[in-house]
Amino acid sequence: MARAISTKQKLMWTALAWAFGLLMFFPILWTFLTSFKTEATAISDPPVWFFFDWTLENYAVVQERSNYPKALMNSIIISVGSTLLGIVIAVPAAWSMAFVPGKRTKDVLMWMLSTKMLPAVGVLYPLVLLAKWLGVMDSRLLLVVVLMLINLPIIVWMLYTYFKEIPGEILEASRMDGADLRSEILYVLTPMALPGIASTILLNIILAWNEAFWTILLTTVDAAPLTAFIASFSAPEGLFYAKLSAASMMAIAPILVMGWFSQKQLVRGLTFGAVK
Amino acid sequence: MATAHSKSAARLMIAPAVFVLLVWMLVPLCMTLYFSFADYRPLRGIFEPWVGFDNYARFFDSSAFLGAVGTTLLMVAGILSITIIGGVMMALLLDRPMFGQGIVRILVIAPFFVMPTVSALVWKNMFFNVDNGLFSYFYKYLGLQPYDFLSQAPLFSIVVIVAWQWLPFATLILLTAVQSLDSEQLEASEMDGAPALSRFRFIILPHLSRAITVVILIQTIFLLSIFAEIFVTTNGAFGTRTLTYLVYQRVLESQNVGLGSAGGIVAVILANIIAIFLMRIVGKNLDS
Image (cartoon, rainbow over all chains, first blue to last red; front, side):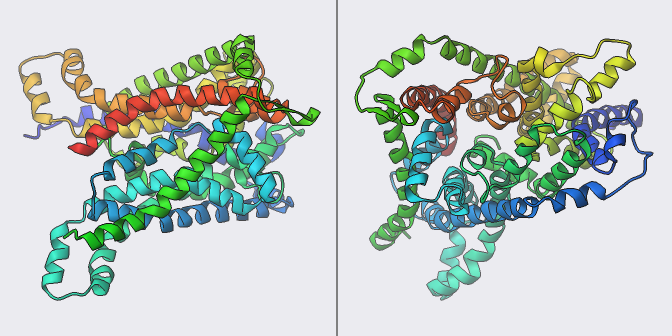
């Protein structure tokens, strides 16, 4: 039974929630504002909020830096590449575990999950050594493969939970109606599986985009993505707040938008179905 | 209809995923294990393949190790308490009737999608900086002496940065759990005159306990490997060197691979202890 809630109460909760929401969002908002200031306004005392001469200069300066376009390109290639490679390997696996479960399916799933819990430092040196030995240190290929491997358990797990929701009866019904295997996959299963695959891709691009252990330690110049590019701002260089802000905004804006779309999948993808 | 034919096809379909993960897990881990029993310092050209447990003994003996374990525990505990307490409060708040709920949710979740190097650098420079940081202006406005966060309270500063990134995660998962709460039970208890605090204590908290456990376990696994936030703020100085960071320094900076590998194995064992508990919960849920 729904109770009537007084408008006054609702207004109170609204005010409180918005206050906390804005507090959490404030660092991003402040970075956004600073990115449109001149370096001098960025550190003016007292701080200026909205009323200053908005300028796009910082964005132009950062883009002209020789390595920004390359870092952006590397980020895109590494995050999209590792996700798609992971999908290609994970779809058949998740598919067969969901539709033809065997006695050991559960054990295999749990084991895959356990590989995700291996701390990265435990394998840091061997990986550097192997990469040097194979001559792939500081290459996009290396990062595509490594990020694929660290996210593969999450990809398999997410796809498995999505595929599990597709009712098996519908397959039998289509077979009764005389559908062959090809049209069964093409017209019955694929349309039902696509939303799940799409959400999995979205969340894993986000995770790969923000990965900041392997991307920093396995790259120097050629394959360095945005995480490493931004880390190069850690040594202060005179007045640089506005430029740091502009670079930061360019690095996080696309992912922020994608992230808002994938809120729901986040819970499913990162709790492995333990919270519903 | 699972026939023998489709069963073997199914096994074939799982094979690539199992194979790459098996190689990924076993090869480097065995190498680390092997190095951990060797005296291997490539910069000095030293390689002695078997020194027994020397590396482990030295790792446990050094004050750096105990310090790093202490720092790791403090950091993880600090971040966990902020995110769990804050997350429960935020989840309950977001569940209330309000205007613009969707937008507030988006605002709250946003920090989770900011890449770690960006959030660390933004906090370090634009908030914590003693000359030009926003907090310093605030201190001055109140007539106080500006506080140099990263050199006077470095561990606390990093806890704040990482907690800001993970509070959205805790909030989102706890909100999912709050929304599955049986509202009739709550209303009944309210009609019976139960005060808000005991409603929270006896109905809401028990309902959330599982979600809280999951958040604690998952976050702990990720938090044990915090790296970028330390890398760009203090670089492990001023008592912010965690176990992960110590191993990184031993292996890549001072190139004492044997000692670092021993530390790596210790980190693996510690993470596994936590992982066992998490797997149990996930496994139970898979059955139901």
